[in-house]
Image (cartoon, rainbow, N blue to C red; front, side, top):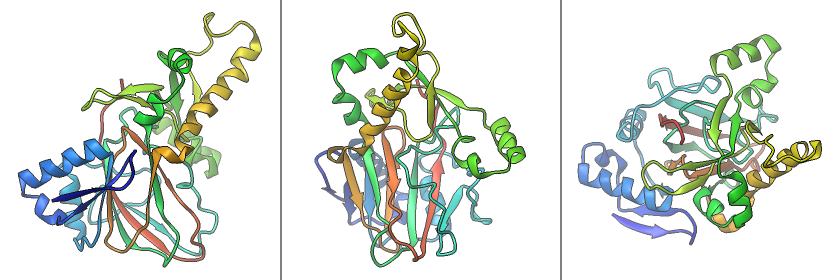
Length: 282
C-alpha cells in the first residue's frame, strides 16, 4: 500500500489497495487503520465493491448504526443512503461543518463513505483537522474552555423541520447529549476541539469565574461558542476531495469535522455511508 499525503494538515490517498481484500487481510487492515489515525481521513479511488463488502469492511472497525432520520439500505442495516436529487432543492442538512451524530451519548467512531453517483463537477466534501484547530487556539482560550461542557441536539437540527409532535418524539428518543468542549482522543491521547453545527450551548459556563455581569453569560457564552465552531472554517486545517463513482473516504469522526458542498444543483449526488459506533467522549 502506498500513502500519498494530500495536505500538510490532514488527508491522504491510499494507492494499490482493494478494500475487499482488507476484509480478510489482517495486515492490510492494520495498515489502513494506522494511516487513518495519522492522516484522520483517507481516500481511495476505483473501489468497485458490493454493498455487502462495504458493510463488511466497515465492520472491521466496529459495529454499525442506522440514522433515525436518513434512510438505510433495507438489505444492509447500517448502510445509510444519502441520496440528493433535483427534486430536493431545499435539503441542506449536510451543508454545515459537523462531526457525525454528536447528538448521541456515544458519537460515531468514524465512517466509510462510497460515491455511487455524482455530478460531473461540484459536490466535493471537505474535512477539517480539529486536533490542529485546538492546538492553535490562543492559550487564554484553552484555559477558558478547559473544563467547559456543551449540549449537542438532533432536535434543533434534523428535528427542526418536523411537526412539533414528531420533533418532540425525536428529542425523547435522543435527548440532547452533553460532551466536553475539548475531548481526548481515545487512541492517540490528543486533545480535540469538539463543538460543531450540532452544538447549541455550554452547560456549565455561568460560574463566578467566568461571569461578572449578565452580558458575560449572554452574549458572552454565545460569542465564544461561535468563535470555537468557526475554527473548522480555516482553510489551513482542511482537505477537499473531488468525488468520482466508486471513490471512498474513511474518516475518524472523533478528530475531524466535514462539510458536503452543495454546489451541484440540479444534478444527482448519491452516496452510501457505513457509520461505526463510537464511545462516550471524555
